[in-house]
Length: 505
Ligand code: NDP
View 1 (cartoon, rainbow, N blue to C red):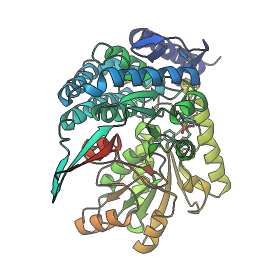
View 2: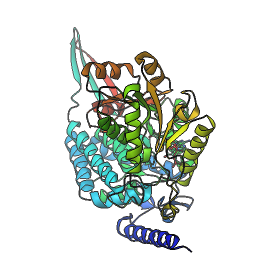
View 3: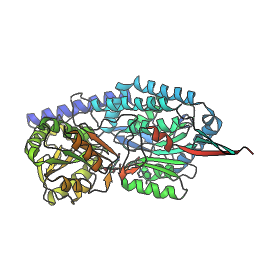
View 4: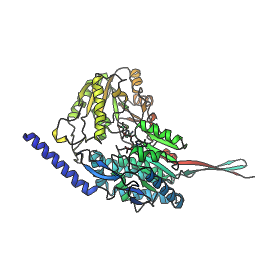
C-alpha cells in the first residue's frame, strides 16, 4: 500500500470513529413509531436501517410502519382531537408552539449534528435548518391568534364566517431538509388546531423522532404522531387514509401526482410542494464576483438537494466568460468532505441511490454533447471513497430540450446557457414543466422587476437566493405544486370555512 493510500485509509478510519462517537451523543433514544404519545414497535415488528451517507455505516434501525400502524396513528390523532385539542384555546396552542421552538433552540448543536449524520449535509448548513425550524414554530405561534373570522349584517340575516381545523391531517416529507420540512408541516397544522400523522423519509427519519422526544412533555398525547417507514407502505397509507381530512406532501412531482390521485377517491384537500428546475438570470451590469457568489450558493447549497435550487444559469454573453471562469475557480476552492467539519462546503448526497441517479443524468448529458467545465463524476479522492460524494459540476452546450436540463437532478449540477436576446432567453427560462423559483442578478431595479414578473414561478429572488423568510409565501407554479407554505396563507390550507347564516326574522 502506498503512503498516500495509508493516509487516506487512516483519514477514513478517523471519520468513521468521529461519526460513531457523534452518533452515541446525538441519536434519539427511541427509534420506534410515535403514536398516541408513546414509542411503540411496528405492528409487523419490522425495522429498516438508516445509513450514514458519509461512512456507509448503519446509524440506527428504525421501526417500519405499515398500514396497520398508520390506522393506529390516525385513530390516536382523532382521539386527541376529539377529547382535547379541538377544545384548546388559541392561546394554549400558541404556548405549545413556542415551547416546541424553545426545545429546538436549546438543542441546536445536537440536532444539527444529528441531521448532518443522517442526511450528509454540512453541519454549518444544518444549524441554519435547525434555527429555521424553530422560527417556523415561532412564526405560527405569532399568527395563531390572528384568526377572528368575519361577521356580516345582510338585511334580515346575520352571517358569521369562521375557520375550523380539519381534525386529522396527514403529512409526508422528504429527506433533503428533514427537520425543517417537519417544522414546515407541523407548525401550521398545530396552529390551525389539527392533530397530525407525519411520515418522515426513509433515508432520514431520526430528527423527527428526536424532535418528538424533546417535546413529548409539551405536546398532548396523540396531537403529533410520527410513523417512519417506506413511501409505498406508510406514505401511501397516510395520504390515502379515509379518515385523514387533509394531506400535505413534499417530494417528487411523480409521487405528488400519485398522492393527488389517491386523495381524489375521498375528495381530500391536498397541498403539494414538488420539484423544481429553477432559472437564475445574470445581467451584464453586475460585477462577475457578485454573480459568482450568488450562482454558487443557488446551486451548491445543501449539495444541490434543494427543490428551489437554481439549476439553470442564463448568463449574459458580455459577462459569461468572467462569470464561468469565476465559478470554476470557486468550485476548485470548495471543501468537499466530512459534513461534521465546520469548514466543509459540500457533503455527500443522501444515499447511494441518489448518487446513481445523478451520475445517470451526467452520463446522459455527456451523450447529449454537454461540455463539462467542472466536475462530472465522483471525486477522485480515496479519503471520500466510503461516502456518497458527487463533484460540483458545470455543464455548458446542452440543448435546452435535453434530459439533464429538463429534469430535476437534485444534485450539485448546473446547466449553463449564454444569452444576448432577452425574449429568447426568457422563452427558454420558462420552457420547463416546473415553476417553483427563480433568481435575477442585476443592479438595475427596472430590469430586476420586469424579469421577476416574466419568470413563471412562485418565488423569485433578486440578488440573493435560498433565504426564505417566514411570512413570505413559498410554493410553486405549474407542476411544482399547489398551495403555499411559510405564511398566513398556509394556515388557511389547514382550515375549512364554515358559514353560519342566522335569520333575524
Ligand atoms: P419521493 O417523492 O419518493 O419521496 C418524498 C416522500 O414521499 C418520502 O417520504 C417518500 O417515502 C414518500 N413517498 C414515496 N412514495 C410514496 C407514495 N406512493 N405515497 C406516499 N408517499 C410516498 O422522492 P425520492 O426520495 O424518491 O427522490 C426522487 C427525486 O424526487 C429526487 O431525486 C428529487 O428530484 C425529487 N425530490 C424532490 C424534493 C422536493 O423537495 N421537491 C424532495 C425529495 C425528492 P420514502 O422515501 O420514505 O420511501
